[in-house]
Length: 224
Ligand code: C5P
Image (cartoon, rainbow, N blue to C red; front, side, top):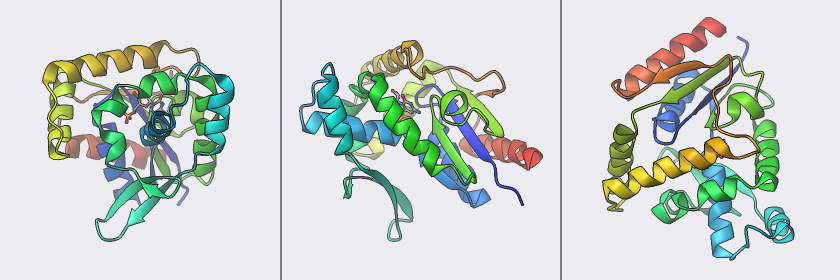
């Protein structure tokens, strides 16, 4: 059976990654969380005080960054590793969400990560979620989904997710962060968040994660 690329793009906290993970597991495909890659770069820049406006410092730092996804058999989950260290928990924290859009707007950062993402998906058989997968990373993806949802519902979902990870954050600051990220992500010059012309839009405000997954799998089946 031929393997395809499924690109899932859209606004922050629409349920892209949970859906992508479930679809990948059901189809026996690899799942690549590109947001985790931008978050890992942000963590490194924060830890090493890299000046975002200094192109040489950014370039040097990018040479020192190695991001991998490791499957942990104990938890049954994929973990994001930065230079061999598991950073899965750290990169989801609010202080990273507050800087990640500025870091990911830097063209050099995007060139480096897009190239790595293209290498990761070259054999196809991947579900990749992000902001520019259908427009930039895999413009030839066989299936492109663009997810949207009501901002308040997105903020509520994000709040629950943070709580489950032990971080208590007010709804207002989450909503502000989501809107700010969506704005920066949509207005940057390199790889802005945009619906690809051939993407199928899905509003996830009032549907469950299982319904989202079923819907994507049905569309994928039609493409194979
Ligand atoms: O998907 P997630 O919300 O974890 O992504 C965090 C941030 O990473 C986004 O707000 C965006 O700034 C950046 N990102 C990006 N391009 C991608 C994936 C994520 O710019 N393909």
